[in-house]
Length: 316
Image 1: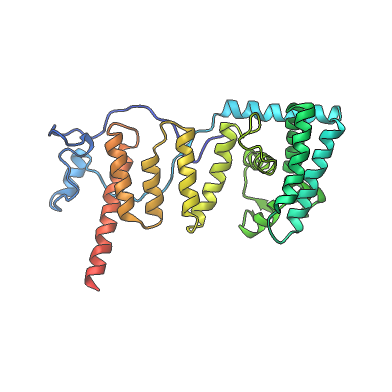
Image 2: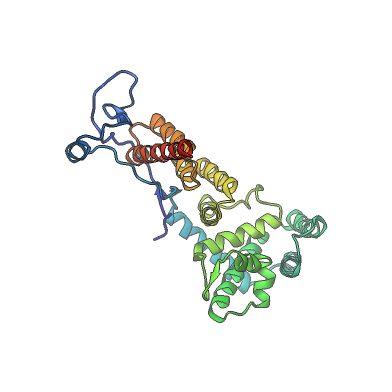
């Protein structure tokens, strides 16, 4: 079963902590100020479940709709099989050969493609769309992405970078080696993520990422965002990328807990004051939500970390 590492599924549930009903006091905090006296904390915690400081660890991800994703993968496979049984028109095959040439240029080049190289390929695509419509091009994309995924499997099995992988992967191989996606004979990319990254590469180079019917489906986009978010988390200098991905998660999932996710991200980067502010906003916006316990405990933890930093500065 395919699912996010922390798939988001929300429902309105009651807050776990009962308390007094002071006007203007959020239910999750009634009777529990952050500065709790130290005397009797253990006993109170045992009796009433006092909020406890907990270090944030995982940013939620939108759930993958497994049935929809599997149906899409079956459709892509069916397209590829049809193309193998009945060759595509010459105009479409010409587009495919041009894509392979771009792959070789990317693999052997010292930098990104220049505008002229991409423009020539896009002009072939435009002519093919005008003459034959979108369906043959969608089928070509399915064929070339499937061949790319198969070439990745062969690379894992043999350790050899084939011509097929060079032409259909372009700069994917250098990127995988540079960022340690390839480790000990295995590629740290799931099978579904490979499809998503292949479709993303083809469609981006074609300049069709926002042109129907070419954009990635919701689930394919979640897959590729999930992959790149994991890379951004490993590289703390990629904070802006991680933040943009979280914002996109919120666009794809209407009830995505963006403040909670932003708090986790800030905490991972030791931005404790900002993390506390995000957790506070999550609790204020969703006092009865499913993230109330975690957000409350992370808020206490982030506040403690910030106070410790301030004390450290004062004693220097």
